[in-house]
Amino acid sequence: MSRLFMSALLASVVAGIPDVFVAAALSRASPGRVLQTIASGVLGEASYMRGSASMALGLGLQIAMSFVIALICSVAFSYMAGIRRSPLIFGALYGVAIFIVMNFVVVPLSRAYPKPRWDLKSVVAMLIVMVLFGEIISLIAAAFAEAA
Image (tube, rainbow, N blue to C red; front, side, top):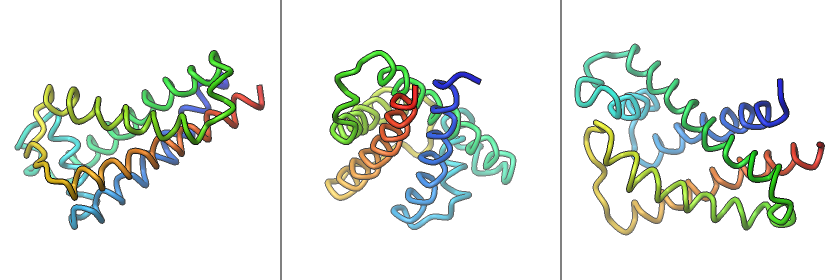
């Protein structure tokens, strides 16, 4: 397997799976409910009536989205030597970009139910989580880029 693929796969699991548990803790919901919420992007409100099948779909979607996000980062680290000098800064900025794209492009275009409610506390919490998500992905991409 290619170095880019391995980097993205590792980062998608290391960042994507804990992200579900952090979201569960922040929302005071079970990880299964968070996975159903992710699946609702495809299934809409019906996701909550499909039990473990929608949880499995949610997990697959979470890993797939995390993989794409991580692959973009891995490609950036492979071709842009300047960002390798500051993976923490890049990771934080990438996390903010992920937050913006997910919440202002992906979720509005999906069938997600319920649509997120915004308040300062939830925005700050989500930004922190996405910055940490970006940091994890960035550090893994940087490590793979350095090994090349």
